[in-house]
Image (cartoon, rainbow, N blue to C red):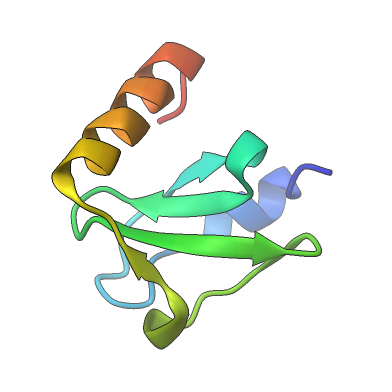
Length: 73
């Protein structure tokens, strides 16, 4: 199930307050500026910095390419 578009409009990274990329197929939100991924569990974003996941350069590149291919901004 996809997150509500209204929720996506107001969600921001708790660390830098910037926008996030939403990957529905991976159940995650991604901050490309900080290379941090936030998981979504049972349709609820887990927006805790301590529970986010840092990604390496290759995963960062993959996510950006996927966002571009999928038209995610």
